[in-house]
Length: 82
Image (cartoon, rainbow, N blue to C red; front, side):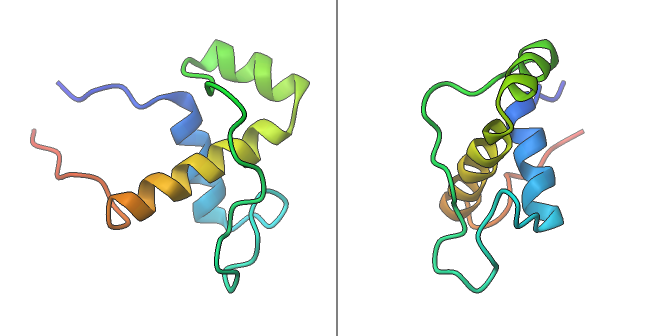
């Protein structure tokens, strides 16, 4: 059984993959983070929908957290076994 991925990671990874400069600095920047997380990020879909509808910065915060995770984990996650 695979662990569940928190919604903030899913959404932040989508931003990173898309290269969305609305939420990230350009790829040539030393640090792509625009907005560091200011607190716990939404874990469930319901929490995400509520938070993101009130503050679009939630996407930038999530992208920031994902870029940190990617940096700290060599750019990818551990292998997943079936």
